[in-house]
Length: 369
Image 1 (cartoon, rainbow, N blue to C red):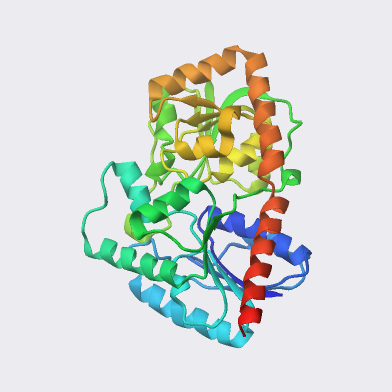
Image 2 (image 1 turned 90 degrees about the vertical axis):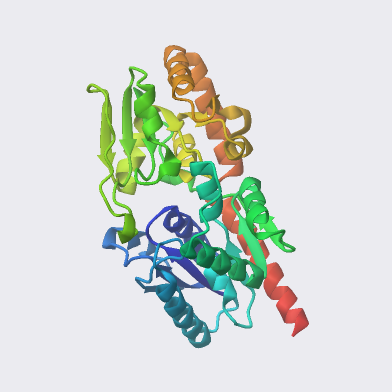
C-alpha cells in the first residue's frame, strides 16, 4: 500500500505524524510525506533516519489557520494535486482540512486535530466575529470536510465540535492519538516540582493559570514563545512569582523526556484541548495528572486524573497542594494514569486502527472499480 500523508511542522501534528508514519513504515507501507507551515529543522527529521519506504517533500506554504494564507492554500492545493498525479498513492491521509477538497480519484481521510471556530468559542466565550478571514476559513474547512471520504477525530468531543460548526458527518470515526511508551522513562526519580508543557503563545493552553495559582511549589513551564504566524509574532512574557517558576522555552524530545521523568505532577491547564499529547507523555512518564475540568480531559483520562474547577486558579492551587502533601495519593494517581496510557493510548494501537481504516477504504474503492 502507498499512502500520501500531509503534515505541518509547527505543532503537535508533527509529533502525531512521527508516530503514525514510523508505524506505517515498519508495517511495510510506502509513505510519501508532504509537510507545510515551515521547512523543518534538521533535528525535527532525525526520526526518519533508518526508516525505509519514506519519501519526504517539505514545503513552506502557510497553513489554513494562519492569517493571510489564502494564496498559499490555493498554491499548495495545486502543488499537492501535482504530487498526487506523479506519485499515484492508493490513499490520502490529510492532516489539514483544506486538502479534502482535492479533486482526485483516491480515498481521502481528513484528520480533525483542532479547529479555529471551536477554539475561538472556547477561548473567547463567543463565536468568532463575522470577518472576511473567518468566512474564508469556514468555507475552506467546509469544502475540505465535504470532500473527505472519511473524517477522523482524536476524541468524541472534537467530533462533536465539528458537527456543531460544520454539520453532521455521514462518514466519521474517532481514533485516539497514541505515543510510543519506549520514548519515555516511567522509572525516574521523582522530584517535588510541577511541570506544564505547551505553546506559551496559544491562549488555549492557559499556562498563565499556573502563575496565577502561585501554589508555593516549584513550577517548570516548557514551550515555545514565538507564534508561527508572522501576523501575531511576538515573544510571550509570563508574570512569574518569586523564584519558584522556571520558564524553559522550547525543548528537544530528549530534554522533555528528562523533565517528564523527573516531575512528580503534570498540570494540564488547557481550556481547549481536543486530545492533548503532552499529558499523555507525562502519564507515560508516571506523572500524576492534574487537569482542567473539561469534557475532553474526562473522556481521555476518566477517573485517573485529579481535576480542578474549570479555569479556576484557586482550585488549581488547592489541588496541586493536596497532591503535593499526600505522596501516596499522588503516586496512586500517577500509576492509574500510566496504566491507562499503556492500555489505551499507545502508538501501536493508533497505527493498527489507522491501518484497518486504510485497508477498508482501499478495499471499497477496489470493489467499486
